[in-house]
View 1 (cartoon, rainbow, N blue to C red):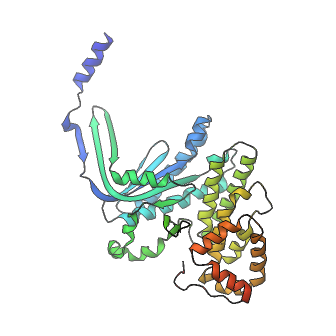
View 2 (cartoon, rainbow, N blue to C red):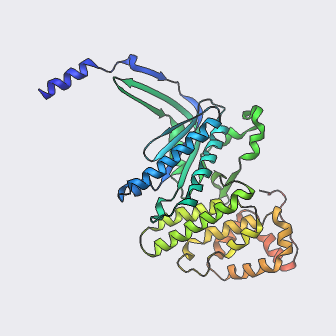
View 3 (tube, rainbow, N blue to C red):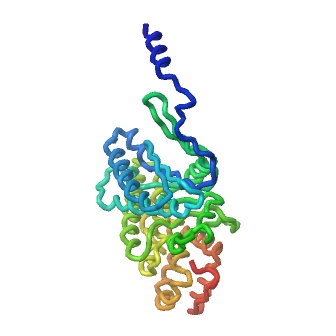
Length: 356
């Protein structure tokens, strides 16, 4: 009887090809895969209320941000969100929407008193350019929409390759930021900053969009990233989280620090947390980011006025294991020799071609 009833229901509402209500041809577009970090752990630990708060908060932010950018579509799932451009040339707006979502979601940490550090408000995303096919179907009373194509696959893969709250760019995705794609919105071009990171051979390792903001927006976000990292180190020392989770907070701090333009703030991170032996295994990238950001053309006047302070920090850094990480980073960006020259002679000459 049960089998008969099931067969009858299927015969009453069979899925037909005419139920296809939307099937857009594959097209070259930009797509962003946003991974909501901490959701799976919260659910596995029985903290469904934590997962719900984070997803609810993110949904409100996405609903407020996306309508501000024409041509951007969004879709949410259990622990991720998708953004994509409805038009091939709307990639710049998709990137700006993702950047704004990152900022507002990260700022929710300021009012959160967390017990589980991994469940902080963090995102990780990949932006790619490729074939994207939007498909929507209806069968009976069930409707669903899916996104297909190598663009979505590339966005997912690039975000999964590294740690931290970063908005990674897949190869070829930066075509959205070419002048011919901006049209009347050329003023937006100055609002997208791409940071390129190189390996020990000098080859491009990865690129990401700087989401942290500018001027007054940076210090409070830097304080949040700093606190989250220290909380993660403390939890790691207590054995409640693994090393990989600490690296998420390490790289998040690096991402925020990479957007800091204040030399007064950067000085603190030249030898940051050196006295904390539990933090030392994770400090190399943080120190490297601070030295690289401080030792650039825009900070020339500050360096000249604070040569003794920089020299003191250099001596402390030279006597630590982090010297290798810092020196390699500065060498790759043509900063190591100018730093040594500056410390020896008191003069400062930076490569004028690099002014990021």
